[in-house]
Image (cartoon, rainbow, N blue to C red):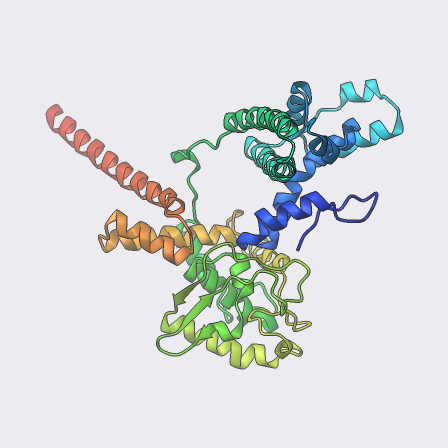
Length: 404
């Protein structure tokens, strides 16, 4: 469970902790998501430190923030963390470095990151002030005054958040997977006995299983590392169950892999079930200390559950050591690759767009069908471009005949 802890006191701040537990953790959000929420909220407290303002006291007293301060908070949320901390240090040192400030180019974050920060700040202030407002019910005048100032501030913040609303995706930024040639090359070279396999023989089969699971099931990196041996049902009708296990007491990793999607069963082909069985029985079982925990994918050196960074290192090794391997190869790119293969299969089977969205949503564990719409738009783009090329070819043929 993450907390917002100022370095100066080394103790978690009580109001943010209350907010994250009541409004976020209570709904089963993963620790990584909670940490991102607190990281976004921290910009309000960084702003307070940079301006000498006690944020919590302002909310408690019903003063909130003036118009100029609110605009300053909005602008402050554009800054990178390093820039914000540097400004705090300048204020504490009581030294105004005008020349340095003129030369330094302020680095800013993107609109989406700024929006996330403002949304977290808005949620925190709305929740914290609502608790205070409810305690003023016995004093109608104070209740009315506090509520009026509170509503004015929240409306102002809402306006800025609305101005940073997410834009709809267009054809130019749809998620892309690996090219067919790159996928073929990856599947070949990751085979344990392939002469170009870049890994030590002791880890080749494990890494082979990792790539196959990512490519064949379209799961996330965190979902892969969260799989336990007991989640695997082998045999001719094998399957793997993807579970959501926030704060799993059996997981010793400092950075626990998170399953952001819904729990679901995923069927395995006979070959993939065979690979999984061979890994569990003939490879994992021989790794020292692997039986001390239930997780499927382990480090061959220590037997401990594999870390998220090690999955990235496997992809990095493939990119660096295998010729013709694309630079964009990574765990999440393989998820996009699976989605493209799924689209091709749905096209070949002439599955309706409605069923394609429903099936993809379930297999990917999404809560909303909106997440699947991006890949459907990609299918529409591919089909429309194919129709456009066919039309152009017909026009070219008709023109050439007319010239004869």
